[in-house]
Image 1 (cartoon, one colour):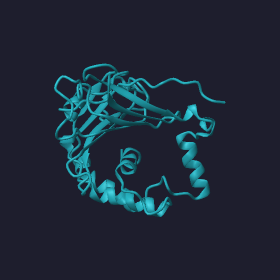
Image 2 (cartoon, rainbow, N blue to C red):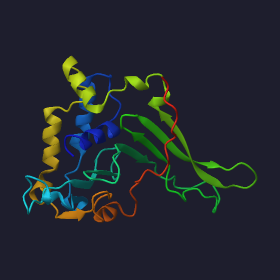
Image 3 (spheres, one colour):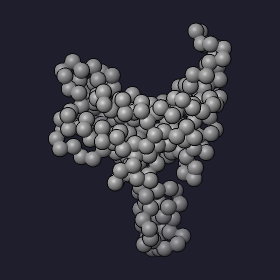
Image 4 (spheres, one colour):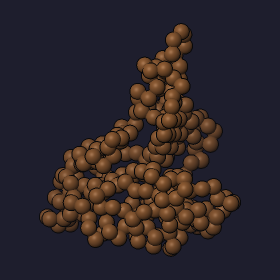
Amino acid sequence: MVTHLFQILAFTAMEPPTALEPNAISEEKNKVFRSMLPIDPKDVVRGQYLGYRESPGVAEESDTETFIALKCYIDNWRWAGIPFYLRTGKKMAEGARIISIAFREPPKSMFPAGSGVGDRGPDHLTFDLADRTRMSLSFYGKRPGPGMKLDKLSMQFSMQETSWGGAVLEAYERLIFDAARGDRTLFTTAEGIERLWEISEQLLQEPPVVRPYEEGSWGPNQIHQLVAPFTWRLPFERKWREGNPKK
């Protein structure tokens, strides 16, 4: 969580840097970390898949988590009061690296009652950070013809549909390559890491009980209580368009 997902959170929530260079980007990420409120253990779900304790070298009473989900807040001008939900785990139903941003509904809708707007959740901007590198924007669009009836639509972009698809590096290939050439853009400063452990201190002192979950599931059932009254957007609602990669 500290070394991976909080970094993704910072890239998502940071303000535009003054330049596309490591020091400027690190400063904006550190501003996010400084603004994060301490993690409340009540906003955390820890899990362990059934069968983990039978693995070689694992203690019979181990309470090491193989899954974690949490809610956190960034207390600054832009994000105050907006919850960020993070989750990661092993032996999940599906392997994915997804950022999904849900847009807030406007205070008053111009569409008439019964039009269908909002029936299938808010608009989403979704980034798939897996090796295929895809983006999707979901929104409501009017059906052709008379009347006002809206359906959920999607616009998508996939790197594999461009001529650059074969040049995409796997995640750790990119990090090793950047380290070799001295590019610190994707790395976290000591200040940032220390701040993240600082806001995690209460969680380390008072960790929630570890909840069991089945292999091949989406994690412990308590994750739904964590995100209520919202719902997790898994499995991904809108199917990705499977185009033919360009060669």
